Amino acid sequence: MAGERVFITGASSGIGAALARRYAERGATLGLTARRGDLLHALARALPGNHHVYTVDVADAGAMAAAGADFIARAGLPDIVVANAGISVGTLTGEREDLAAFRRVFETNVLGMVHTFHPFIEPLRQARRGRLVGIASVAGIRGLPGAGAYSASKAATIAYLESLRVELHGSGVRVVTLAPGYIATPMTAANPYPMPFLLPVEAAARRFVAAIDAGGSYTVIPWQMGIVAKLLRLLPNPVFDALFAHAGRKPRETT
Image 1 (spheres, helix red, strand yellow):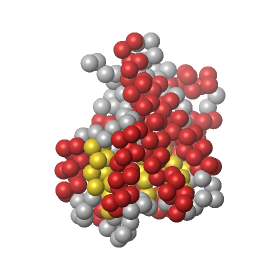
Image 2 (cartoon, helix red, strand yellow):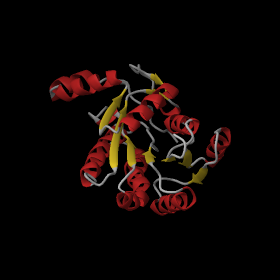
Image 3 (cartoon, rainbow, N blue to C red):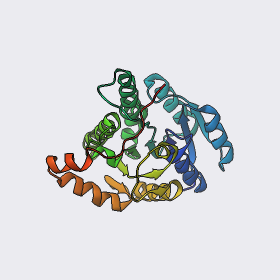
Image 4 (tube, rainbow, N blue to C red):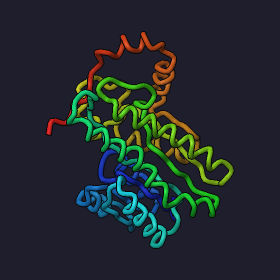
């Protein structure tokens, strides 16, 4: 919508870039953040309108606070803040070299979401408006083999967003949790296993924006994965373990 202000992390590619395109098309002024500044600036130049670019890492609380303050000063208080930045890599707890990957995934996926929202919480509360949107994942419903860091981080974001939603109840600030299934992005391109109900990223972005506009507290996209998630919750542990023990696994980093 014209005059809308939207702040998006992880905007250099994938879901973040697709959301940026959707919001820019409807006249929003954007705050775009990511670590890869070259891709971020190229995206901003390709979008209609004038936008604000911040080459920062969401794991850096100070840099995120500065970016949030700058966006408010230049564009005004955002109507929507989308904490989208996230990373995924295969991990095994028994492998010493994977310990650093565990830390990096949690710093980005969990603390990065906290750092994204922090600069806007009190200004939005005082204004009694705004939407804080966290991108979680159906991978947070149950722990998947070879994806301990990613599954645990997304389970943490689901719980964190619920806590934040209750904290802000009655404040005028909505907290929206989006839990995607498989979306065709660079993050899923390396998955060496079938991905049911895989959505093209632009189609996913349209559904995300519709869900954000609707303001529901929790939405799984696509809806078919919502049914799968509910079924997974109901599986007894012995059944779940037997079914998933030999499931395909995301590759680990080897360098």
